[in-house]
Amino acid sequence: MIKERVPSKCDALIIGSGGAGLVAALTVKDLRPDWSVWLVEQSNSIGGATSYSGGVCWLPGHRFKKDPSKDSELARIYLKNTYPAIDDACLNGFLNDSPRLLDFMISKGLQLETLPDYPDYYQELEGASAGRSISALVYKGPKMIRSLVRRLPWFFPSFSVKEFMEWGPHRMGRWKKTVMVKRTVLGHLAMGRAFIGYLLDACLNAGIDIALSGKAEGLLIQNAEVTGAVVSGHRVSAPIVIMGCGGFSHHPELMKRLATARPVLSVAPEECDDGGGLSLALNADLKVGNPYCWWMPLMKLYGEDEKKPGPDLWAYYPTVYDRARPGGIMVDAEGRRFTNEAACYNTVGGIMALNKDPSLDRIWLIWGSYYVKNYPRGITINLQPAKSYMNKSRSVDELAGKIGVPAANLKETLEHWNEMAARGRDDDFHRGESAYDRFTGDRFYQGHPNIGPVEAPFQAVRLHPGCLGTKMGPVTDEFGRVQSEDGKIVSGLYAAGNAAASLFGDTYPGAGATLGQACVFGFRAAYHASGVKM
Image 1 (tube, rainbow, N blue to C red):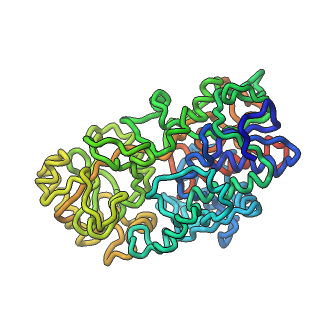
Image 2: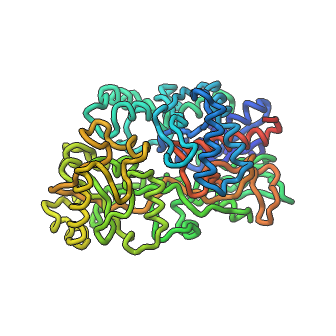
Image 3: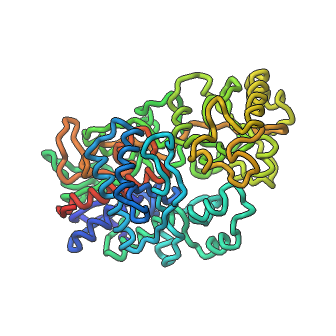
């Protein structure tokens, strides 16, 4: 039930209402139905960062794979190749319980489907595959539950990820707009909000108590044992505390702890971000690690001389597929290409955030005439005129002057690119050679799905180093247990999701890796905390 105030004591206290927190609460209550399980959320809505995501979980070895056990072993090889320093015990736990988590969620009423064609992000590595990502169907449940889920900007579309892939991300003419309008009018939830809707529905049906506007201000720890937490000024006594309270990407001081070369923007919900798991961990002298983010190149939806149009989630646009379409390239401050534009967002965003080369201080995404006529530019559809920040230009010289790059370099870059585009091959950075690149390109294009000429007239937007959330937090073991600074396990205290140091280091294995690991370790933490063998 939704409660107006926090309890004085409970058997298990869950902090945060994103995927990690809701899965942890649901699992504890399922294993220990006689326990008093409380979830506290510091904002006045449910869902956290999960609600604005695609609602996708990367879960190797799941039931929809042709040979689940073989896929799990291939995923082990893939993850070891992706991040050689990955903790073996945590890796084993993740792979063992990814299938079990999916089965559990389905048993609790979550309507989930596989994305069979969605490739892992590092296709060049042994063990890479496709179809390891699971997504939520549209949620049409009770209005009361839908009203509790975090609201999103109008430009978040009302289709499932699978529909998005089937209809074509870049071809809006193929979208089933009548269906989308009906869902919007009826208030149905899609993508991350749908995932949260299903979980919230299950949690309330299970008898879990939820307190909104309940801010966790500190952990109560005595002799390496958690005794509860301070929530909105009240001491809550609890022998089990599971942190699923997200990251800290809107906390200026904590962001300075990251290994970044330049400032990083964020599309994480800022109204419920006061430092997340890292802040609680530092104040409790817990061991922390992994100073990185889930990187994402972001486009500002306003000009430098314009007023910011609301919160970050409304003002910044994540460029997931925009860089992969034919007819566009990225250049640095010298007017040169510097990477494969179609590589996964974590790779490109990581270069922008971490590389100290001063030429990367200003990055531009340039669109040619074909791109402008056929594809959305952020939230601006192809039928709409250019926004003020899009630097509309009739020639290379005019464009170079507007974006401040050497005209000679930009002209040389565009000529060279167009020569390669005529051959359908990127000899410099191998754009379009990976199955992931081609998947995020335009399969309806009459030519290579990622490669096409960039010709006048032009438009260009500046891209900024950004993130979907942070990865730094308390270091956890294979059960999600946290450690004190001296390396001792703190009994009864767990962390999962962006509230913990990421299992995957600075890598991003595939679509839904953020939410997948969050939910798996929320699940594992709940099992261990409940004293039930897995």
